[in-house]
Amino acid sequence: MSEFSSQFNRPARFIEDFERLLTTLSEASQDVDSEQQWPAAAWEALKQAGVLSWNVPLEFGGADLNSVEMTYGYIRLAEACLTTTFVLTQFN
Image 1 (tube, rainbow, N blue to C red):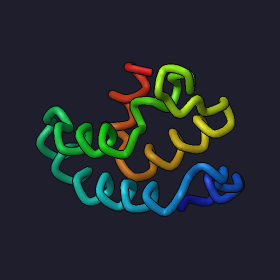
Image 2: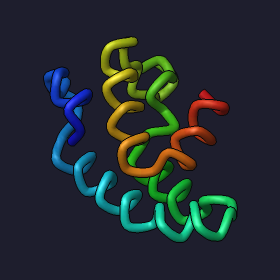
Image 3: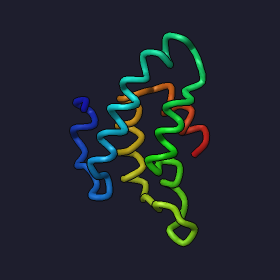
Image 4: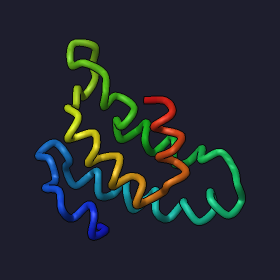
């Protein structure tokens, strides 16, 4: 966790699985960044962790995160893998 993200309290909905996702993304980031390739493995990890549903309302099966929770998530994801987070934010 960087000095910047440590200024935020982790929202209650971000459980330990999120920390595992960050570790997975961080480990894959070297290859993604150095080989300038599509982050397929990282994207699959985001999908499996439910990140793609952060901005989807609950009634449609999403997580319905508020703006503070999403900002926290994006900051932490960017710390783990900026390339993957860039792709994600273009989608969301």
